[in-house]
Image (cartoon, rainbow, N blue to C red; front, side):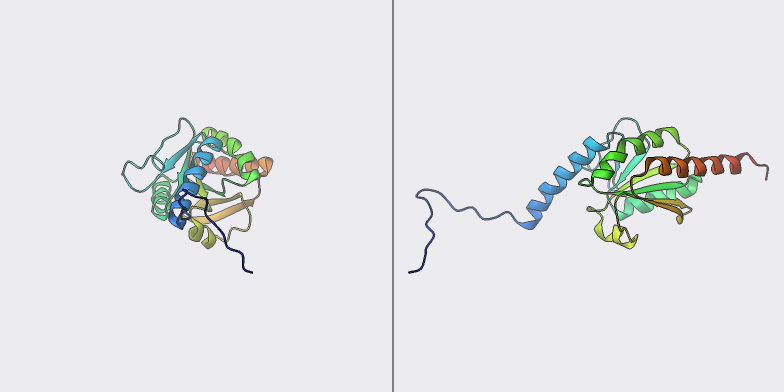
Length: 179
């Protein structure tokens, strides 16, 4: 005797959401979570459209949220033109250590305006993040003229502060020396 499932009378069976519909909902949740965790981040998108999920600008801070490979390239070109060293934070909205260090990262971005602070969501830019060989989040890359000069894996506040201070001090020393 086989078992048969019966629909309750009068109820329509709903089809499951498509992958794209479900993913859009997840991304909207992730973006709002990112906004709440990184209040000083300015979202940066290469498009000029009115996509509020991407183009929301946050008060304060010097951190740009990178959402596309094009925006990454654009910010690196800008940093190179301005002679700025880039600190790129590869993180994830679900990552506890990433959430813990986010406010500190924002504070550092406000203190060291001569540096460019970027945040890349590893889930939103999966392929791009994989090309950087990310093994854990957060991972911070320090870039000069697009080349990696240092790296920090993990949410180690004292070590992050030490590396950023050393880079900023070196940058100031280079700018004040006669050429």
